[in-house]
Length: 233
Image 1: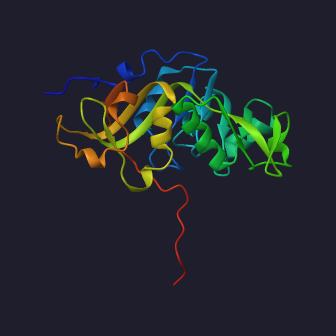
Image 2: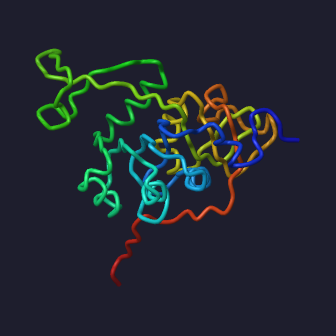
């Protein structure tokens, strides 16, 4: 029997996500995104969201659904090249955007999850990324200070979980999800399969349940390809 941190519906999983919340969201392109949770947020209609994720999906799927529904106020991402609506809203001033080098974004999330408020990195020195940020020299090289990121909620997609919230990610979905899972005050994990307590090999657990507050079993995964490319014959 399922118990522990397992909730029975998407509605229950996201019941306390309100207007103005900051969300950190796992996934890379359309791989490893919490599809059902995103659709649930679209249907709930919460607005004025700040969303931190590697990218913003595509025009008709992933976080692009929230963008199309005018639910996102600010997007913090490292790549936005697959979404025309994103471009339109940014250029019109409707959407606030913070572009972050990909490695820096991953480290900001990891730092936030580890309780580290800030760190120094050489990435972005001498570019627009460095504007307004503290700079310091170490061993003759200039670094800029970046803040750790902690969201009100973290939304992740895992392959398997147990009722205690221990998570296993599968292949490429093990991208931003593990660091995102640690960087939310409340972490909600959408999973393909829930197994019994003790069925997960401890050596295969990627995120310990101590970081996870809710687990929901998703369904009807599209697992779409962001951009299909085939070789010429």
